[in-house]
Amino acid sequence: MIIIEYFVNIVIALISAVNALNVVMSHFLSDSTTLVIVIGIFGLLIGSFLNVVIYRYPIMMKRDWQADFAEYTLEKFPPAEPICINYLQGLLAAKKAEVFNLVTPRSRCPHCGHLISALENIPVISYLWQRARCRACQQPISIRYPLVEIGSALLAGFVALHFGYGAALLAALIFTWLLLAMSLIDVDHQLLPDEMTLLLLWLGIFCNYFGLFTSLQLSVLGAIFGYLSLWTVALLFKWLFGKEGMGHGDFKLLAALGAWMGWEALPMIILLSSLVGAILGTAMLLVQGRDKNTPIPYGPYLACAGWANLLWSNQIMRAYQEIIGWLSTYLTMS
Ligand SMILES: [Zn+2]
Image (cartoon, rainbow, N blue to C red):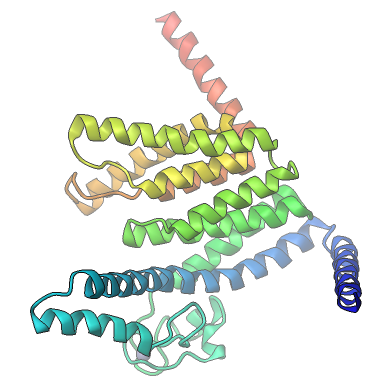
């Protein structure tokens, strides 16, 4: 009984602490300029962390897959050749020998292995201060790192300006950062990690349990129809052309977007993402001269369309109706 009382006291203390923090923050952040600046700076720091996630998370997944594959094969179908056994055991040993997650080991220069200190890790500033070069070996650092940090800050600033201080802002920030990380992982590896798409889906349903963006009913239907719509398209594509045209990660991502915005948002998200995809995809084919069979990830386009729709669904709908209205008058006149 004493333990339960102790536990209840801790929970009460935590709730009052969160309430007090909320009162202080809402007072301090009620002014929109202060809010945008504070959230923007926070966005820079999160952007720096997203760089780590985008680079390391796929490596972590690959290490897990390799170890699982090696373990399963050694146990169920042990190969006859010693060289194969050595290779599989090597994969398992490599996984066990080195801890590799989002925190460990500390970041190093990919060229010379120089340990990156806290001073060299300040978002954007370190990059400019070091003139885009490693301090130890002078090899260039990719411009993508500061771009992700600036992108994260700008998107967070927009979200803060749009929603103002409150629960919707916190939810929309997590939505934004998850989409940003997923999009870049998809660009690099043509892969949308289940842990991220499904986390986004559950978060969307959880937020709408409290009616943050839409009702719970519309959210659940959004998740179901989001998944089924792309699944049907992919099935038809496979049936017609005999090959996979879309990754299953895309179905889960659209399901997640449906969970955040409700099923009525889905047609607009699909329309917008196809439009952006067609324009950017064609531009990339023309500029880079890639052949038509190069897989183009669809995830980033879905993410862009979903993000824009969370913030500006009314404006997008109005623009759509205006274009349709303009087209119909134009077509009836001629
Ligand atoms: Zn270096």
